[in-house]
Amino acid sequence: MALLGLLKRKQCWFPSVYGWLLIGVVFFVVNILFMFTAQPFLAPNHPIKSEILVVEGWVPDYVFELAKAEFESKNYKLLFVTGEPTEKGSYLTEFNNFAEIGAKTLLKLGMNPDQVVAVPAPFVVRDRTYETALALKKWFHDSGMKVNSVNLLSLGAHSRRSRMLFEKALDFEVKVGIIAVTNQDYNPKRWWRYGDGVRTTISEAIAYVYARFLFHPE
Image (cartoon, rainbow, N blue to C red):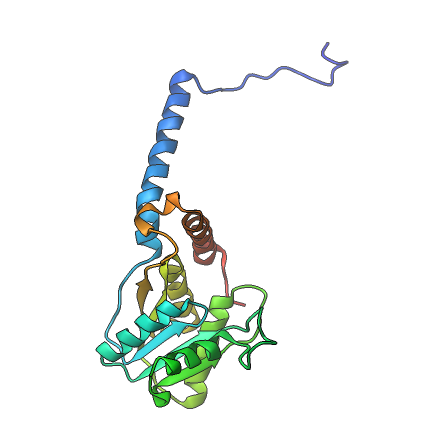
């Protein structure tokens, strides 16, 4: 008797050498596919015809420069900057929201004040992108502005998730095009060779899966 009847023998299946080899090959192939397809998937470029351009306010300054160029080269009428409250530097500046900081940045770059609108969102502990999209929806509603489509400009691997959350917040009644600006912190074609690339790509892939399958608006 094994330990006075506390243990008993059971038969179980265990991979053979060939089984482990197959598992290794599958793991290798999946990783190679992820390496070369993750960035193109997470950072799509699918702009649509629209008179409204939306920029996420948390992005770096070079994204605002490209947003200005995009606005001036196309038939846009208004540029909206969304954003949540800042978590640092509020004692050093009069602006405490990324939407206001982004809008002021565009004005410093020479844009017409009549064409730039800051849309601040309230502080939330999670789903911040969705909350900024809800703030934009509320602005459209409160202003009585009828909007059929927008182009959303975001940064790199964050772009696909942003578009999906904006579509949900706008109840899929507004068509959302996406413009993904290349992240200058790493080479997106070789993201696995950069610390920022690995951190950003993997975290955004996990966040996308959460937003796609587990996130449900309250």
